[in-house]
Length: 213
Image (cartoon, rainbow, N blue to C red):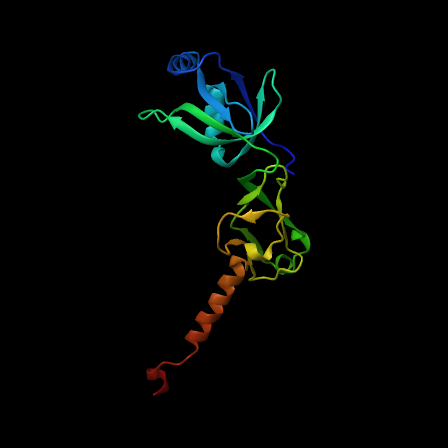
């Protein structure tokens, strides 16, 4: 399971409706609601600057959060919608959904590379080029892996590593329905340049029609 699920701190909003939401915004908060999980919806307030910082980090809609509300048990949530100001594009309302441990969620999982120091392709001078350092996975909320491991123990120079060649955690599957590339071991530029020079020399050594005559 993922070692650290980021916190999302909120407070319960007293009152409901447009009036309470407008008051929240005047107080520097973004009104929201959390629902699902077999319990009643709860109106929330999240500090505007705090939420804006989280949004600007990216991946907000696909990040699993640990919702912390004073006086309530922590609960895992995922964002299901952010309403924004039509002109300023700033958040004005947020919808959060509670997740049970058996719920499935789409979330980005980091990719780690094992045995890079003993990789045959790297030892021969090859360069590990990472195409994806994270992969969006469909996983159980109660069993989110820390990372996906790509084993480089037998990878040679010129090899391309696809998602189908990676052992995924049990119960997890990639969201993208195609065999996409994770990384490759490419030849160093110096070697590529050297190969190109050899080809140029070989071409120069071939006599032209005029020389033959």
